Amino acid sequence: MAIMEILTAPDPRLREVSKPVDKVDDDLRALMDDMLETMYDAPGIGLAAIQVGVPKRVIVMDLAGKDEEPAPRFFINPEILDPSEEKNLYEEGCLSVPEYFDEVERPARCRVKYLDYDGEEQILEAEGLLATCIQHEMDHLEGVLFIDYLSRLKRDRVLKKLKKEQRLTAAM
Ligand code: GNR
Ligand code: NI
Image (cartoon, protein in one colour):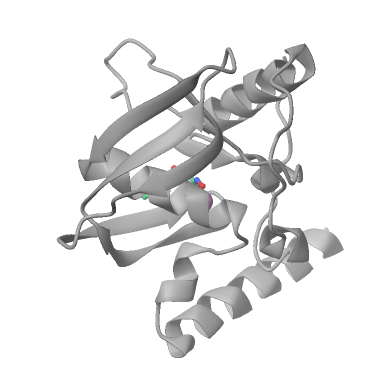
């Protein structure tokens, strides 16, 4: 197991469209194990492979509270089915947009079809935080960040601050 480096905006790799996985094998499981460890270390509740620089359609997630048993979830080649008309507002954050949170509106419920850790096809009914998080992660697979839903003014302000911080870190 290994902790990987998480890319931060405006890294152009975060804009790539990730490629479908053609085989769920031990190499892919090793990547998912490393992603999970990286996500727990961050800490975060979800992570898409492109956030660690791997353009594959792979997501790891764990929505368990800190006093609960870990409940890791793995989504390979996920597809969203039947998004609800009803929307939900949720205060989102992103490990690739550190220290910024803002409200995003998304379908309140959806179904997700995906392959699990063993490569078995699954369909999951999602609502609440699970629905929000899976849609946030699916966006990463398309090169979309939650700040893309904000006004241009807000987005540019966030990106400018991140660029400045990266300049300062690079100079250290
Ligand atoms: O850790 C995370 N928290 C979070 C909170 C609200 C909505 C979405 C998320 S996902 C985020 C981790 C991350 O950046 N995943 O891509
Ligand atoms: Ni994110």
